Length: 261
Image (tube, rainbow, N blue to C red):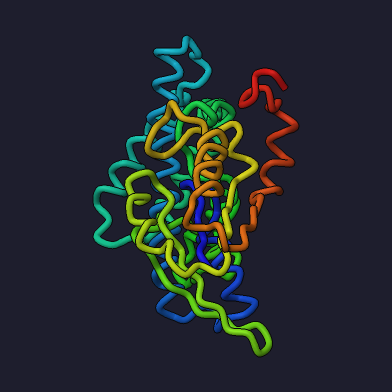
């Protein structure tokens, strides 16, 4: 089975969920690796929010996106603490600084405009977990690991067993720079699972903040489904991130992505 999809579609999360149900779950080494990923995801989220708050305030005439004066020390402390970290780790001090910044009205206003720039989908989840993550004895839970984001690079193999059936799943990185490697997996595919994020209708790509994620997925699926390589393969379209989509659609109409909707 071949697992394809654009970046941020949730392919790797699907693999992790399958591992919990049909595989061996997460090892101690897995939890250590994903603890590092959680740190990187949180730092990336706060860094992007702080940088984009300035952009919105200056370039988009949205002064309410500025970090409030009383939280400027926390902003400076964040960059200082991250720079001083010798390993990926969020201690209590850094967790409290992040918590303070996340509660800042300017950062919350910037978060409302997250469709204008790249921000990991897991930002809100990890902000709700920041007190626990800042504990000295914290280890990522299964739920934390499912939310953690590690960008897929290259092609990875995963073996699963469901009853008496054995499956070999190939997961190929979805970013544009990774897609040239896909051709290496196109021979002998029994089934192709194409993963598309429903919530991507209001967000841009990591590698191109001018390109819409869902539009990218539609174009990519159209290319893949009509490829001569998959004439004899079962093709499954997996629409992912329904939970996020249900929340986003309350705030942003589909016309954001489809002008004639």
